[in-house]
Length: 208
Image (cartoon, rainbow, N blue to C red):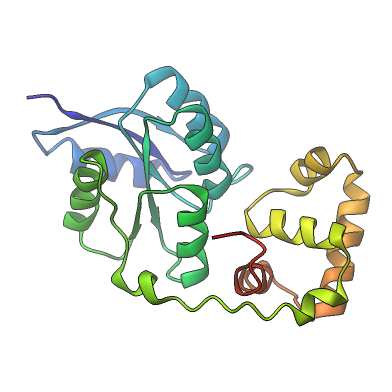
């Protein structure tokens, strides 16, 4: 029987060890590698060609959302299952927009992750049922308060890009990125990254 080849991406070694033990206890699953951050996850995905990547969202450096986007672009045959402690619907929507095929909370039963891996490998998706009814508001009036460049910066922040990454993508300095972020916060009253994510989702800045 051909086994599902899985790559584990999580910045905590103990978590990866526990996941490996769990998954390798299944006859139809094989853990082919591990990664401690998003950059390594993409590199090992290219090298190891896994069927499924189990991706944590909150990792230092390049986070899980950005890594998922890269994997979908560079390793399109690999399916990503996000495994996270964040139960905010904004993160769920971000994962879907980035191309993830599944979303499982770390507090869920271990059997759910196994089910998700098998489902996405079979060409299906695995998301909480509530995701289908998440309201996406399209009132764009608040967007008139910020410039087009500030909208671009806001969207990239919401997608998990770091200040250096945003500067590179938009061909501006890191200081300019920070200035734009400060202006966004002042104009819209958004102080935390979670606030920025919710606003970007509610106003259609992330598409979909």
